[in-house]
Length: 287
View 1 (cartoon, rainbow, N blue to C red):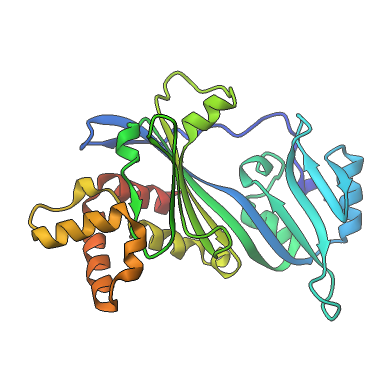
View 2: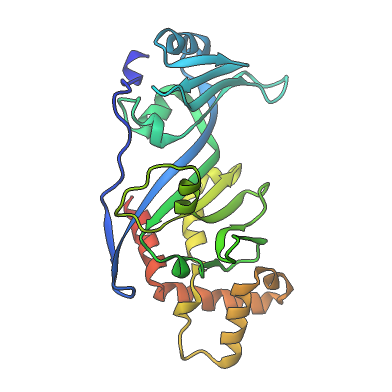
């Protein structure tokens, strides 16, 4: 067990990856991360012994049926508990954690850490996010997920978009795009001077979608674009239809099957021209 845990003398640092948009003529940063993971499986080591070990080292506190892993600021970064989904099933273990924080504790990489702890692990939740820095707010606010899912925008007092949700919270996939700079400012958190804007695109996956996160991210990005990149050669009817679908996601459910296929294919052509979405694809595949 000792080799699984690192000391807590340092915290994760921001990636220095830089991507330049030639359309906007500005330099911006983009960074992908897995914000939250929940894994269920059979533990290879004794759960109680592991919990006692964490407590003895001052790494955890016992809470309910499990243990809360804490950092040097006494903040929760993971929760481990015993679970039994039915009386006929054997006892399993569930661990819920933020990989960005727990990464400072483990000697192995994340995949090795998971397989060190579990037999046949599977994801029941995964929150995957991309932080986009220094893209103007009005540019980010026009982006839409063009799919037949519910759309819930939240506007601030100035009438500007602050948060957008696509999909229900209880669904297997929900996408959220929000003004992270505004959120951090309200919390009075430190923001480096070189960051002028900060948006986060977050894909929250549940149940079976959690195990398929790589393909789900690709499917999501295939429908994520801005009306700025609608090609000029489109007919007026198609341009009006695409802009209407982007402004009101609920219209997708009113289309016939053939019309949905037609406009989804048009959206995917737009995505291929969208500079920001292309960089999202590229940075995700390289991360």
